[in-house]
Image 1 (cartoon, helix red, strand yellow):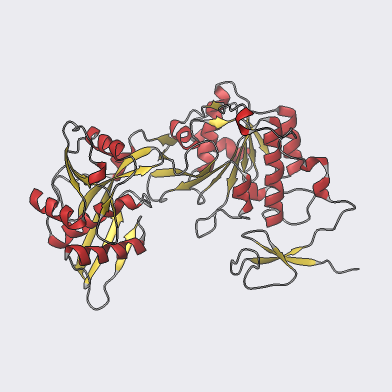
Image 2 (tube, rainbow, N blue to C red):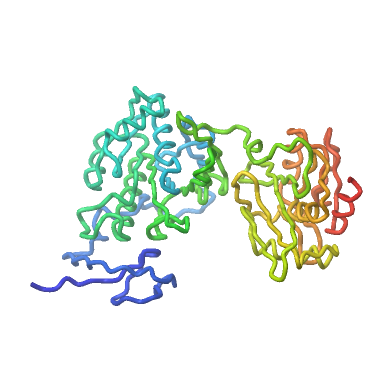
Length: 459
């Protein structure tokens, strides 16, 4: 009997190599090549069959201005926070990939959304490959969905799933999860690079050709990235990540890619006994309740997608000895080291022999540079042991030359803070409003040392 031919396939990009290598020759990732059985070559190219025809019908070449531009029709999912992340609702024929840590609430959220859609009259289908139908029904009972009309299919074979979709014609289909689905056309095991890529391609094609909205649940690696080939994220229309600490009742759903809406939009949910509930005022969970102002605390108005959020930045500066530590939670550690150098060079505040710890309250991750000014003011407040005034907030990017640069959509940030009762602000000069905002005293600054002088005068 002839020995089966084997290939080494990269679990990150799907590239192949005839022998094992420590580094993938296609994407450069280390230790990602896995031995797989090579697929037998059919008589003709399987990608030349009708099942791999183009997603769009062939049309004549025409100028862009002559093509009719129509907005996408959206269907509300019944969960306002989920609709916000999706850009307003579920798009017909759209494919959504949602990933997150085990047990964080992906299946719970989608089951709640399908139940709300089904009760409005839209046919839905929940395909479970990780659980039996009885386990899904048990979860529905715990969520208070005793008489849920959602159609459930416990199946992992792709061909049977596609046949069921074709016969029932649901408006929204959830595949939980894509790593459990396999196709008979391939001999590799479910969850392998070839199976995930092939099954996702077939489901995407079925969604585009029939107009069904398909939601794929994906596993994540221990680094937090979606498991499987990177091409999986390129095939779908929207990529959502479930974030949050399992010890906290709050969950964040963040849009990493969205062809039908804004990226980096977030939805905030609270995990309760009856499932996930949307949080209408998320700023409240990111602000600690201090009876009196404390040193090392500064409120930042950050921007997540289209939503301004108020987040408390806490800093602790303590004597560190010969090798001081620099630790940040929710903020970029390299940027923290840069800000400490700027603070020393341009404001004369030295922290070279001090341990510096910075934390964004509530488990939120802040990546925008508009947090620089709030971080510097929190560090200075902790170092001097002097609290910032009550109702104080700040935002602005700090450059290496010590200048304070404007943040995008500054007027919205100021109005959001004023609405929540904040009264004193230090902001970049370019973000100062032309008309005064009622109840808000704004100090516009151009440099770091100027900002520190303003705060010193407020105390």
